[in-house]
Length: 395
Image 1: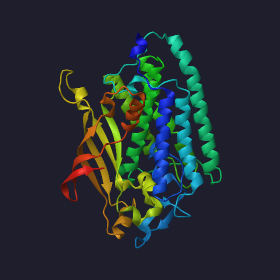
Image 2: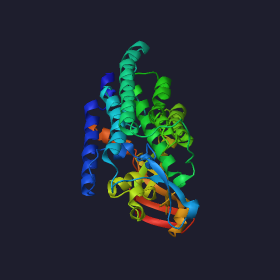
Image 3: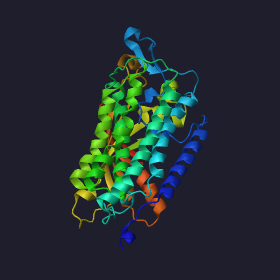
Image 4: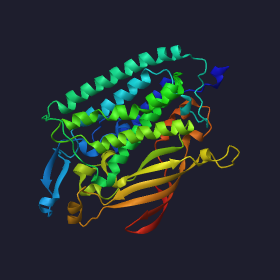
C-alpha cells in the first residue's frame, strides 16, 4: 500500500533530465560560436568565484594610476583555455553524477506534491544504515577522486605557495557571494531529499544532507589558498555555510522549504567592454557577467497561509538583488570608464514549479531542477541611480 504513495523519481529519469540540460547547454555554446566545453554552465554557475577560472595577476588599469591595480583573469586567447574550464566543470558534474548513480531514487520532495512526505515508514534504523553506508562510501570516493583529479589538471602546473587568505568580500557588490549561497543551498536541498528517500531518520537526513553544499564547495578553497594567484576566501566559506544552514534551519523549523534562492540572467552591455573577464558570447557571459545576473529569494506564500486558503499554491512572490556598471571590481577603475557601480532591488512574481500537479515522473524531475531558476515575469525595480522602474518582463 505504501508503495502506491511513494512517487519518487527513478535515477534514470533524473539522469535523462541532466542529459537534456547537457544537450541544451552545448547547443547554446554552438549558437554563441564559442568552443564546446561541456554542459557545466548551470551546475558550475557561481559555485566558484568567476574570477577563479584563470590565474590572476596585477595590472594597472588605464588612467587609474597605482590605485587602479586590479585583480583579474589573465587570458591568452579570446576564450578561456579549454582544459581549465573542463577541469572545474567536469569535477562538479562527476560529483553530482556519482551521487545520483549510487542513489536508487530521488525523494518525494522532488515531486509536485505539496507537503513533504518521504513515503518511508517501515525501514528500521539498521535497514537505513545499510542503504546509506555504501552510498556514502561511493559518494566520498567519487568526490575525493574528483578533488585529486582537479588538483592534477588545474593546479599541478601552477606555482604553489604556503596557504594564505585573500579578502574579496567587498568585490563585485557581493554578487559572487550570492552565487556561493545559491549553489550550496541547492546542493544541500538535494542532499536532504536523497537521504530522506533512503529512510534515514529525519534529523540525520536534515543535518547530514543539509551539510552537503558546504562539504562540496569548501574544500576547493584549500587549493586556492595554496595558489599565489588566488587565495582562500573566508567570505566564500561563510556563504557556503550560510547556504547549507538556510536549508537546515527551514527543515528543522517547518519540515519543508518555504524560502528558496533562485537565479536569473539577461545579457548586459558591459560584457563587451571587458570580454576577457565578463565573458565573450552568451555562454561565458551567463557564467561571468555579474551585471546580467540577478539573485532572488522566492517566498512560498501559500505555505504561510491556512490549508483552507484559496491562494494558488504555484504562485510565489520573489525579492531580487542585482548590480550594474561593474566592469572592474575597483571603484577607481570603473570611474575611469565613466561608470559608477550601483545596486538594484526587485519585487516580482515567481512560479513554484513543484506545486504544479503532474503524474509524469519526467516532469517532476524537471520541476525539481527548474525550482532553482527564476521564471521571467513582470517586476518592479528600485535603485539609487534611477529610482523606481517597471519591467514588463524581467529576466
